[in-house]
Every structure is written in structure tokens, then in C-alpha cells.
Image (cartoon, rainbow, N blue to C red; front, side, top):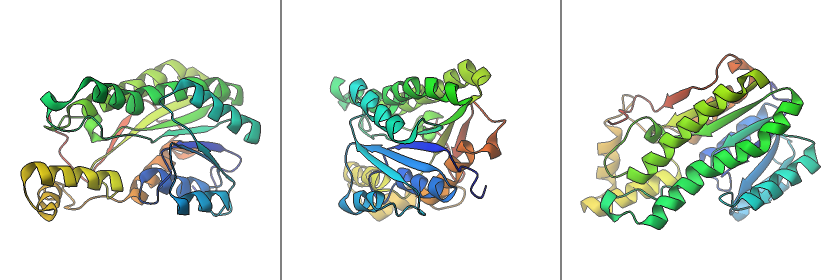
Length: 265
């Protein structure tokens, strides 16, 4: 896959912090030669400076602050990317939220709406926006970060799982409708991955169970066949594969990248 993405423009959402799958994906895609455009609602100071200084393997990195739950901000961001780089070849819908996790009866209407808006609708709107551009280029690749919560349901993750199952459905719908345009759409479904977002879930579970966070980690990771959490870099490798010509005959799949984690009901 060395430099397999040269002359490709990749848009990645939710890559504004160091310890996340989005940032790891930006690093990986840049190492394969892609020009990188990042969309996030906020950036850590370190990451913002790093992107602006074009330190991603020498790749150009365009940084755009936007709320992708809002359609006008999506259009503004993609238009800026097109003005800067000409088009879009790869879209990584990575941005997500764990809002909607917790006891089902405690989830209020606002949290249902936010979970769906960020985890599902934003990916759909971004896909609608870039697909015409990909058609003009003769094809493209969309990769959605759907989580194993999009394959099964674990108790206490109701609205989150609903939104991620919908994202898997979106993946298959786009793959079915635009395959003839040489546009591929696949989902990666990570299990437990050592990111800041995942650690916030561990903290919540420790609080709910009135136990030490190390106990939560042990209980969760002991259920994984590999007996550990994954890393953001490991998931980024899979995202890069699904975005690259190496996966040219794959579309519409929801690939579990969980180290052998049971996916629930």
C-alpha cells in the first residue's frame, strides 16, 4: 500500500485530538500520500498546530472547524476543500459521540436526537455532499466508523447502538446505490479501543457500578479474545485498507475490528 493514495484527497471528520482514531487515520492516510482535510468541532492546540504546520509526513493538511450536525456547515466545509484541492476522493466518517449511552429509561429526547444527529445523520449528509464529486472523479471510497455497537447491542448502550446500527444500514445503502459509479462504501466496527472517548465510557461504568476503573477495564478486556483493548493506530490501518485500492472489490461490508469481542445480542 506504499503511497497508494498519492493524488487522492481525503476528508476525515472527528480528528481534532491526539488520542483518537481520526488523528491516527490522518497520520496513516498521509503516509500513503493522500492530501488530508480535517473537519472537527474543536481541536487540541497541539494537533491544530501540527496540522497547520503540515507535519503529517509532509502532506498538506487543511483544518476546518465545523459542526457537522448542521447541513450548512457541511456544505461550507466541503466547498472550502474543493476550492483548495479540487475535489474529494475519500471520506472517512469518523466523528461520533457516546451521548445516548447509559440506562435506557434515563435517555431523554435531546440525547436521542444528538446521538442520531452526530453518529448517523452527519455521515449521511456528508456522503450526500461528496458523492457527486466522487462521481465526477470516476469513483471514490467512503469509510464509516460504526463500532461493534452497530453489529450487536450491549446493555446500557441503547441510543448509541441504535445510531450505529443505522450507520451500518447507511453504509450498505450507499454501497448498493452507487457501486455502478465505482464508489465503494464500507464500515469499520471497532471494539474496545484505547481512546479518550472509550476511557470516558470506562469512567461512567465505574461510577455506575461503584467500583474501581481498573476493575471495569479488567472485566471488559477479559471478554476480548486477545485480552486487551486495541489501539487507534490498529484501527487506522484497517481504515486505510478500506480506503485504498487494496480493497477494490469490497463494498457494503461492516468489518468487526474488535480483537474477538462478543458483539452482544
